[in-house]
Length: 138
Image (cartoon, rainbow, N blue to C red; front, side):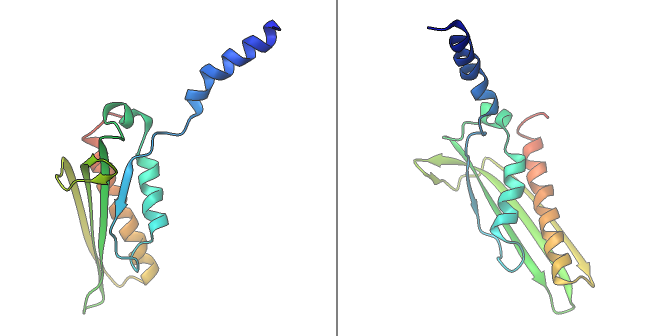
């Protein structure tokens, strides 16, 4: 066998794990669709779920749940609550026995629907960051 080819194969085999995607955690979302869409929620989670976290908490044993609720009240105030929870996994399902939970909330008057959605995304990011800060050191 050609030595260069063998060296390239070994190098590629060793480098592949460095570029592999982080393990997939089970993430369930039960947010109000008119306030925040699933794509925005998953973007926040994908940014937060790291390889470092998966080394401490195995994706086969732990998952996450998020819920962003709210909207406009009668006084046209945008009210948002974002809750995230770390839950154990049994098989392929999350078991509602919270290990860690973080909740953030805010209320702001005179916002448009787009601004209220932006506020909801920010509150979700804050809740996820708060939860992650208690799980792994950055």
